[in-house]
Image 1 (cartoon, rainbow over the protein chains, first blue to last red):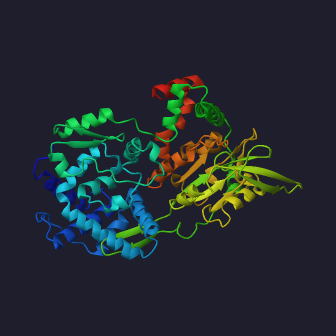
Image 2 (image 1 turned 180 degrees about the vertical axis):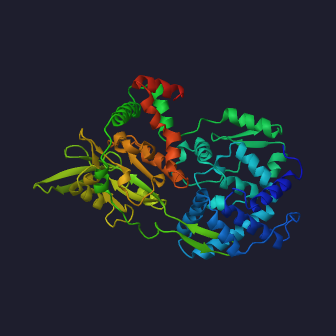
Image 3 (image 1 turned 90 degrees about the vertical axis):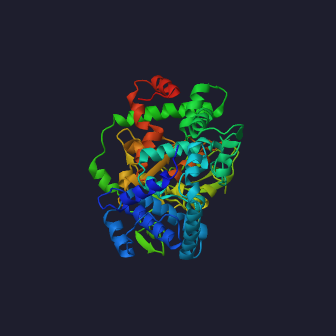
Length: 351
Length: 150
């Protein structure tokens, strides 16, 4: 349980650590944190015990570039992607508006940050989305959470995906809805506490301690849904011979097992072949280059997007030469050796 | 097409097929005529052919891409056999209307868009590298059922 005043001490300690040059935390968080504190000071936030050396933008940029942690890139990318594709307009004004909103919420919501943490630990899955989104950007976040985020390892991120997916099995691709769960102090202090476990809301008649609530939610929380893995395990366990997907999963597992063992004992490919096959694919505008954007409160780094390579047949589409089988589209294919055949294409995608 | 449109906001998208260009280009022209969402196309000639005649999609041919930022979604595991940790398995699609694997995959892909190294996440999630530790598929299945992969 948090004692009164603990959160302020924690914040002060973390801010001091963030300002120490030898600290391994990334500089983005540091810059962001100092900006937030400066802004808090301007608006007379009751956080006066924190002393900050206000850094200039140049200082911040130098530190940022010289000691950058690649993990922090992703945070920047998230911001940028969201801003660019959500606002679709004036990027800077959009950023400034969102930052204003964020700061206001942060100032007004300082007393609620512990409650937010409670909400996270009690199965409020929407706290853990797959990446930063509008909701997350606009949520008040304390400095501790910012630093924690910047220091996450990939292993932690994996568990985050699994946690976030736990209540989202059927919600992939659906609009994001805010799940308030235990997010307000009134609800926590009141006679009833609501815990959202993904299958409805449970009302507890008595106020319970945070620990007991956590244990309750842990025991009732459904197993996390992980793409491919959960379905595979489910179908291997149920062994429903009539089920199409059950059979397909088992077949696919066997094929994957054989293929990977086959590759394992294969001769390595000659390096000359690699050299011959190499292709240098140019990046499209918007998908390339590193650039830095200055705003009033943020320094934003834009980096290359990741590359997603898709197979075509039996991954995106299914083609058939037999036109007697039901199809969505019929396309003529001309072969260089001569001759034209018509293939029917069954779409995986909704066109 | 909705999936590709949405994913193209998070990723640069390449279609890499072991089929011939004369066939794949027609299909891809139909799917994405303006080449808005599929940024590059790679065909059979870009695959590496083994002595046994198998076409493997060796991602090392991508000269100016860091493999920590590249994933390959393929229903055939041998396609990413040289870079298992870059591979994302998917059930083969045989025109079953109830097949929603791609929709499920999107959640995972969006998550991957923000990680430092996709290989580590794939490794921890799918554990494909562990498949080779089992002498028989039956042992692998038993282990997967119990959740005791080694």
